[in-house]
Image (cartoon, rainbow, N blue to C red):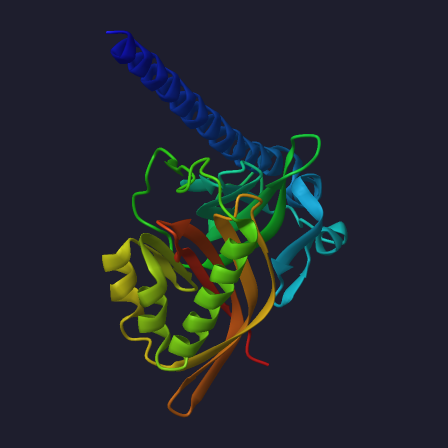
Length: 289
């Protein structure tokens, strides 16, 4: 019996360790969602400019329409009485708990006095935890689309896929670059099929003029007609300290017959079962000159 008792003690210890890790990850994820909700609440109460300056990191990136420093952009931004409302309906976090992603619907209203909506869309934000444990936005991009139908009430929380398992971050980074290179090659043979090939089962696809496609089936329906040849030029990105969550952004050019479309993209990658998969892919068409 002593051997059995020792095994039981070891198992109980491992179980408690696993449960404590799960609880820590969940708490970190909920703190990210709380930061996003505080950001939205500050915007509603104190205005767009002031809230974005408060929650944006110094080196934050936005698309306006090309990638540029968000902090500098909003320093000179004028609200003009407009009121911006939003909420997260999806959030995920890295195993190291210092890197997170949120997305959800936004609505622009005429003013605080007149709540008439004048535009709708969805946002995609990348967050990073700083030394004082505060979350700051490092990338923030949005797409426009018609008024959506019924939306989820609760925020979907996606825990870190790799948990606290030790990952060779350098190796994870090299694997990500391989996945990026493979995607670039496939994009040249058909943009829609390439993204689906690299997608996770619960991918979210954000495009202007379309409500977000959530899940592989919805993504396939949205992307199936996108057979154009595409090239993507990477401008920047980041990798979590745990090597399991990453983002890349830059410009794209898509050619369909005689038509050429240009714009900007933001892709969120997550390491799932030792393979990098796209969990969110956003493209925003550049205005015609």
